Amino acid sequence: MRLHIVKDYEQLSSKAASFVASQIIMKPDSILGLATGSTPLGMYQNLVKLYQEDMLDFSEVVTFNLDEYLGLDTDHPQSYHYYMHTNFLDHVNILRNAIHIPTGNGDINKSGKEYDRAILKAGGIDLQILGIGSNGHIGFNEPDHILKTETHMVRLTKETIEANSRFFSSREEVPREAISMGMGSIMQSKKILLLASGESKAQAIARAVSGEITTVVPASLLQLHSDVTIIVDEEAAKLIN
Ligand code: F6R
Image (tube, rainbow, N blue to C red; front, top):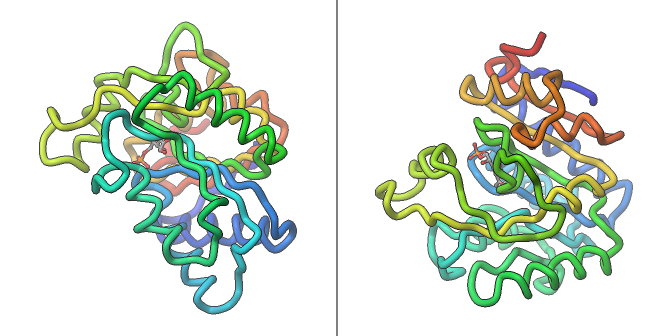
């Protein structure tokens, strides 16, 4: 694991964008695995800026998002479809049919299988971008005694519902279930970029980087991957030994 500790969120966002930009420059038809949440927002803003300045071309890029809430329409302001389009995808020249986001409605079993097939057909993910939950989740693979390899339906933990309630007008509105890429597609990605900012992520980052490898800290499994880059700010790096 390569660890970069930067001063603050602003530096994290520009370093992460540079990392993704170099991936696209080296391989214009990169298959990117994308995350939502507050952590990558600054990175997306920087990538949009690079595109507007003619420094990046997304015309051959293909994307697969990690997850989506169940039961929200794609135009719901808190859906990950809406997030991805408004914060990133609508502002760059990516082809509409190159965008993949798990479907949170209908037959989840079936759409999960189709999603995994589409990832395989595309050739697998070149660069997977990850945030981390304060409980150590990646994607919506929540701490458990077993983890699933395939894209699957997830029951969100109390901790995740609480953490994500900041985006909704009340805790009750947060969907209790989601669809998430499993550990298989994540671990089979050629490269992984893990981002974390702020003190609330410090414990999860310390356990991911140097704690025991255990399914109760899903991010700790990343220690088994041969090409992981971690960019964290000083606050999130606080508890790393
Ligand atoms: C989002 C995702 C989650 C988030 C994590 C951190 O697609 O898969 O694992 O990355 O919950 O969220 P933020 O960045 O909002 O703290």
